[in-house]
Image 1 (cartoon, rainbow, N blue to C red):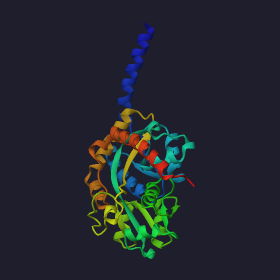
Image 2: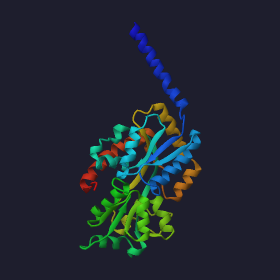
Image 3: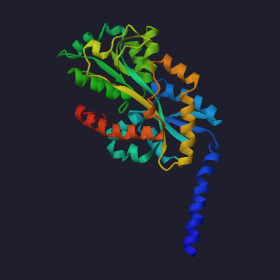
Image 4: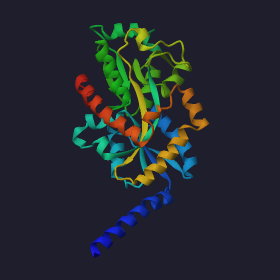
Length: 324
């Protein structure tokens, strides 16, 4: 009888604890970890969503850039934090890639995180330096397939979406090139503008302003149609490489073990943030889109992580991606 009474009291206490946790949350500023340097797509979207979420949560939300090892150090920082909702990570397809490229780290994105929700889907833009003299995608493909190809393709580091995209580009085109890995896409873009490297294949959020400002030349976009913001730039299919169809998702996760009540509060704030006029206007300017309804929220993002863990695992093997 004593055991039954004790068990009943424990269950009752747990039932009360979950709502209480939500009522007390957030008790202090929230930190959103971004695993790359400032200046790239992830950083730009993270700061936008942090600003809009802070309004709904009535609490400061700050972005912390934890760079190194293609985002692995940021991931490790998240997993070492207390699972109380005050430390989160904003990432994209790369959060699935990181454990695949660094198996010794012992990270399982599905088992080790609590999904909060997706934020935006973003097409990829293939851009070349003005100094390269490359006018369009067919010309780049011809140069990549040349026996004496000396094309340098810059990315934000191993495990980033640009790293994956550029490896896919070389594999699908049957071409050759040097994958130059930086500590974040910002430095890679600086070298692209300077003409130090010839190619960067990254998301619209960072690439559009550079093309529109005539700092680099965009020659192809992923997706099924041209972008309204840069209608003069053809799709990969129009340029002769229809197999390249990579579009990037971006989302927010917490450490595993974060109370469901806290996840629900964060998911609600995120849902409100991405529907705000400020957020919608800004991502439209950047040619990003709101995620489909089925991919929003903890359940939707959880399904994406499971799906991409399998799909990208197979892709990494096929492409022979590795950390240098």
